[in-house]
Amino acid sequence: MTIAPLSPSETTDEGDDLLLWILVWSELGAFAILFLGFVVMSVLNADSFAVAKLHLSPRLASINTIVLLTSGWQAALAARENAGRRQQRLHLLLAAGLGFLFVGLKLLEYSFEWRFAGDDAFHSFFELYFMLTGFHLAHVAFIAILFVLVACKPERSNIVLLATVWHVIDLIWLVMFPLIYLG
Image (cartoon, rainbow, N blue to C red; front, top):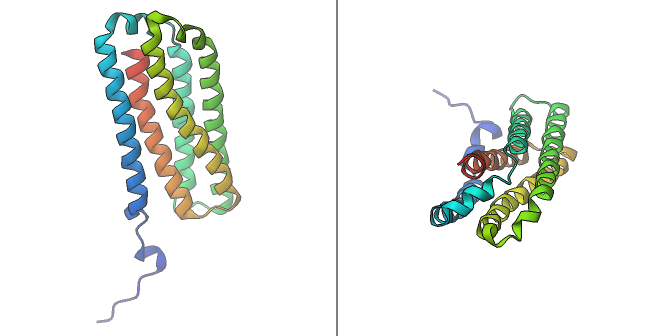
């Protein structure tokens, strides 16, 4: 009985990339610490947090949720095994464009909220709000830029890595959205 040699794509499992999983878990850990801080402060300052949340825009944040998830869908389409180079480029650029739209909408939202950040009654809420959402926003902007760069010369391993991290950023937003806007 002879065993056929494995092709290069069969010998490497892209899901076992240790560095990728270290990155994913470190991101989840960092955001978990920030979420915990937000929850603790919201319990300690329940009244001021409740009033401060009235100054947020859940409608704009809902639109941004749809934009971000659609971008993640485009990243997943780019990462499909049977996607050709042209499809990969198109989906990566769409994912990046939607990521930049998310950034633009978030900055628009910030422009409405910034004036309340200096109010002493809401100070701790907006400090944590801008820290959490700003850290997330920086991730979205950075990865959107990387999508554009990878679209120039798409390699499956880079696409899978970025799509995986993008989905983690989606997941973080899906926790953040109800915690901040709906809770």
